[in-house]
Length: 161
Image 1: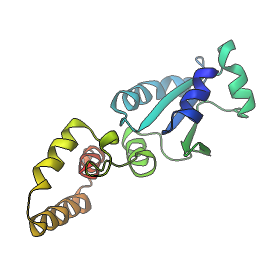
Image 2 (image 1 turned 45 degrees about the horizontal axis):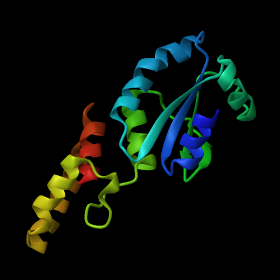
Image 3 (image 1 turned 120 degrees about the horizontal axis):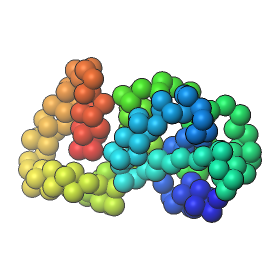
């Protein structure tokens, strides 16, 4: 329980929590997707699990009024919200990128930037303002045009820039 509270309420990060039961078929089917999201998680967010069948975590589920499984909740600035969107990997990635991720700004605070994003930003640091504006326009156009299954990953990469 203390790990839950420190992650959700004291880490300073936005994130998502999956409340589940190990015997629930829907929870079992969501596990590979959820595990993949956790592996890919942006450093500014958390992806967590609460096993409502485990005695140590059952009190968390009761106090959170969890009655169906899996239940997904997301937290923005320590405020809890129900997630009611699609459970597909692309929909979850898009939701996380658009709602939870704290964007990288390597010029103000590089804390939430990947090494790749920092390197990309530094490449543009010494460029002419006109060139930077052209690059921003190009990336915006790419985001508008991307609607394939790789779109979520591509949009995440472009948002980071």
